[in-house]
Image 1 (cartoon, rainbow, N blue to C red):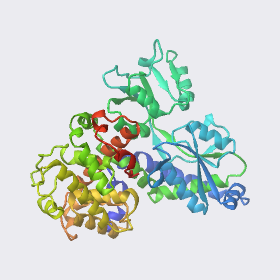
Image 2 (cartoon, rainbow, N blue to C red; image 1 turned 90 degrees about the vertical axis):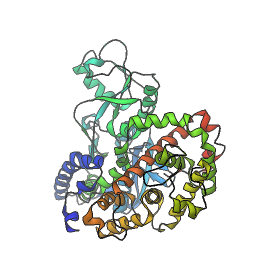
Image 3 (cartoon, rainbow, N blue to C red; image 1 turned 120 degrees about the horizontal axis):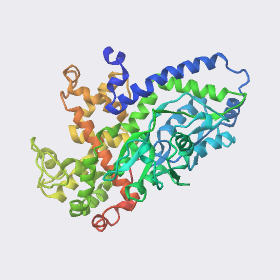
Image 4 (cartoon, rainbow, N blue to C red; image 1 turned 180 degrees about the horizontal axis):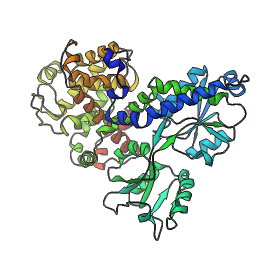
Length: 494
């Protein structure tokens, strides 16, 4: 146990989170701690701004509505910047109030004009473009990527984008960057889509309405599952820092408190944990598999859509989740048989099917209702202390590897000093159950924990695609014709 606690924390993260930790978080820890020490030494004896916030009891955050910053999920507000801001507000003993703006640039301008206390733009910016603001040390690094559509000419550098017409379309936030690049590349031309966000430009790019666009890698990584035809061409320069900003002035107390908070959050790996929670699932993304999934939406799913809707209605589970499970289990093949003997569209074992009263595992309707009922049973068995999306992800892991192995993983998390009610903590230790030195001390022994993590992650990705398609009304008509009410009545997970 001591070896686990004292080793590099990045060792136990996913491949994506581990790379992010080593490339971005670890260097930023050093910078932030140094800044915090320096600021503490000059701490003002007249805490005007901080005193005002604590007297009012509210910290006002200016940010954007985005999966990389803040969004409203089924369980309430979520997003990386929102979680970080909640932590700061809790330390200050105040409530957090979120004010949303169309772009990160407008969020920054809101703080500069004293309409909010802190800005979380969710994107890298040049501090010189905002002389009225003071930026905290960065808490993540992002790259600006040129995005193209597969099948079209692949640009290799900015010179290849120079020429007639306006091949590059960007959001307003990239205007300062494009002006600087145009000074270095006189032939470079671009156009700005006022009022549009990165997600809207990605939609247009996928539809062939524009030729190329620019997106931060964190935004594109979260959205690429929805646009498997899009890919990255090259990065514009080196990774850039993402930071919060406060209004510049003689009083620096809020800046000092925020900087010190980030130093503690990085030293305790809270930031790494948050990034793992929101970006960790992206390691399983495969554009080829996603394209196959989208093709099967129209080819195979219509035959079973009504059964998935019936199962969702009977159990109260999202039909999109059950559909994603069915695809991960068998690619919606009712005659699928695994080497271990599980069978059918939802791959039920013989004992599980018998327990559920399913007499024919190869009957697709019975298999779907059986799988939904079994997942519902697992959810009901989980302790009440597991809440929100964590509860669903753990139930899915138990569906894949067995409830007993999930209990072993939670015990191991507790033994290593983590939170056993957190899916992020559980998914970190599941791969350890592949190792003899760990599984020999568990009650249920060896299990392929790596496979269980991949299982849940892939379902999350398919589920995200289905939820996005549902929200965009872009599901195949063959599917929607067979879905009467589930999309309107079934809750989402997050």
